[in-house]
Image: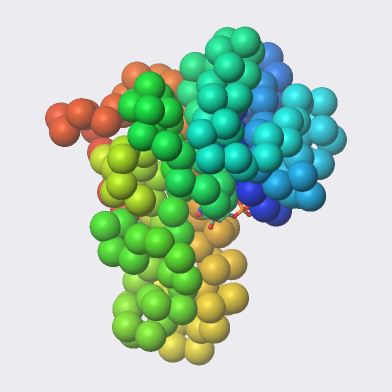
Length: 197
Ligand code: GRF
């Protein structure tokens, strides 16, 4: 598996912990970041996992990434805080083997500034969604969701921390389901919804 990450990489860390080198189901063998200073690259190096900085150049990034994924024999690409929109040919080539994690209960609140918008709307619950990536932004078929309560005293930071803590369990679980053949992007495949709390 390859993980694409642009930032601090706490979800990457959860995936590195769940799928270390030699894991019988699959291992995180490559981490790619569009940002050289991303802490995600450090996390990969600390585990002895190949970490590659690929600068974002429209058109070029996807081509270079594709060549790298092929050279390393990657079967599954996991976006974890990857802040770029991948071009259509890349998404098409990887459809069904390309996942993203988003910090809301999709289809509600796609895009950015999720926690601020959830608080402004006085939602009682928020959560996270692991989904297959399609040509839209945060629109692909859902694989798994986990729900958390929104508290009246929440700040965006407090809500983000609560969502993140379930993301770290949800992403490895979703990947496990996919690797075991228990989930897929087609409508009749198993979709687990709202498993926590
Ligand atoms: C997560 O909340 C994820 O859902 C979103 O970006 C955030 C990344 O956090 N796509 P981290 O870099 O994994 O800590």
